[in-house]
Length: 135
Image 1 (tube, helix red, strand yellow):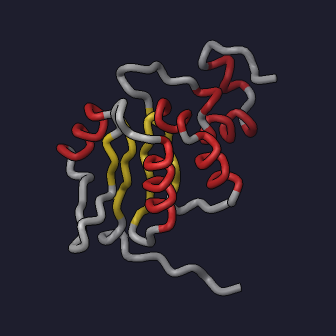
Image 2 (cartoon, rainbow, N blue to C red):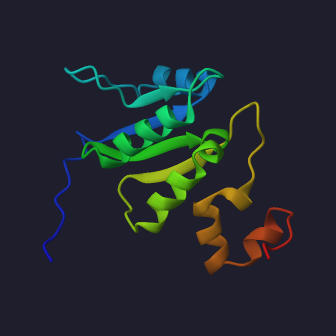
């Protein structure tokens, strides 16, 4: 089995899927990129955005070689939970999927795969968050 070759750190980007306020904030911070073919590394989700479109963008971002991390609001991740969990089950670590809160929906660590991994190795994490352990 050969070693995977990654692009240089300068070439790696962050993908974003979320509501307008979250994505706009990230774009203003410099995350946004559009290549010569018009491919974006972000998706603004609103009430008119279909689940299939979100899944297509998610799969596109996870298969791109220039994406190191994907930030997705937890509400959007809930909409495409099957795709997010399928990617997590694949064992790939690049790009890393991070669920972030949005201002419309509070963060629920019990739905976050990263927090679940932390809690697996550090069971006191639930208590530190003021929650009962997941059954």
